[in-house]
Length: 248
Image (cartoon, rainbow, N blue to C red; front, side):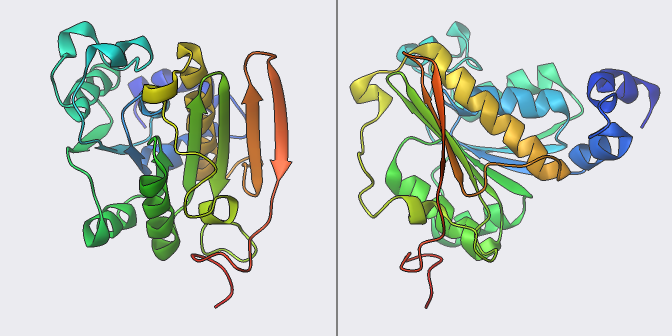
């Protein structure tokens, strides 16, 4: 690292759990962020700021006025632009040392698997069960960690999945085919800062996974009730009957 790089990340390098070696791991790492909305916005900003070397942004949507209440990576001047382009420009302004790649379409099948295979970790910032299930299956096939978050109304949750590892549950171990609900914030609403809280936790768990420090939320679902500001930590195990990772 040169002097400018050391200065930029000095507050992280000061942490004994990270040090120069941990920062170098981040600089050499890559992450795919699916969804550049309320969750993907803080995730992308914090991962770029922390120095994750390559970020792949995936979103097929365009910036709309109703997005600006919570999708903090986009500005009024970005209205009508593809979200991946808007987000890319902000990240390059924030940290020009980070390589930012964009995919402005929905991925499925072989394309989804190929994208997942080329990164070290996947962050799910999407808002529907079919996409989440597809990401989980792709991560299972490619043996990639998945950091998943969700937020609606005043409620949020985060977990980390290591599909393919012994005794590690996957996303489908927690939710069946239909999920407990398929509500979205577009239909039901969501308070703006909640997305920042949950997205920031996703970003932190991503950094921990990439640097292999601390205890990540593997096998644990962290739940937030923002109205009462109460956190709950629910443990769960791999489902032997899971259609993705269960016993065959």
